[in-house]
Length: 362
Image (cartoon, rainbow, N blue to C red; front, top):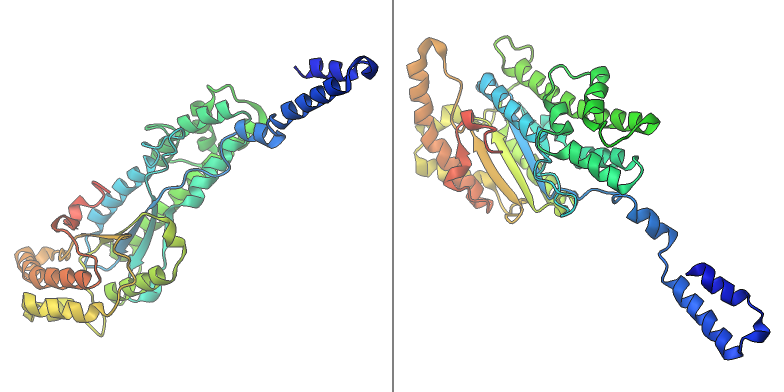
């Protein structure tokens, strides 16, 4: 079409009427104005610069006091790791369905100063994987790589569950998974390196969590905490929620407590004080300590508690430990029910779960 128009324009103008030449000129201008720009061509030949980001955030608050059974928590952590391995299982690039969630963890220790949020799998990790795929030339190849990376049992899942993954063998695993698109050369090498870098970084975080659990709660602990500041951790979370604008982009933020929820500090020791309280007294106390207007938006935040009242049993006197836990559970449950209701975050019956079920359906 373009050569034909150009040939018309290059003819001897003396043989073309003024009106006819003007008509041809307008035809050329109209044709050129409807051509896609260079930028449009480059965009159509590549996936978007940013992935469709998840609207869900799951924050795990892990109790590192010695009263929690570390073996049960570590087993649950393994299940959580499997969830991260399958975080893309339902994603769909064509329908812009993102990763199922992003994940963070917060250790509950003896003071709220230790309650900083630490990453497990974040939007930055999601974006890093997406950017790695964009290095591949051609949108069709990029989509093939994304599918192989994200599908159930795909490369991401393999890298999260592979035993003894290292910098060297990760490249081999990635190569075997991605070689079929016909990729080769330096770009293919860099693609594998970038994917492995993200995978190893995420895996190292889970190792850090497990190390912390074992160091504080294992049979031979190497670290000690001065108590369990559950209320202080919640207070800090609430202040962050009240002042953070970055949380506004989420549709759901789940706060998942993996703890017996027995607050123990110099100011308040629930284990000692709650045994003598009735359910009604504990409820009133929960309302008092909940305090004022909540920083947790009830349309955004959801609460789940694993292990309420399940303090680690004393092997020397197991029956006595079980009886003490059962006696403590009633006022403890009443306290936390009323505490969260006062904040506008009523917990349905199903959101109080046993510690052994941690990770099963997160």
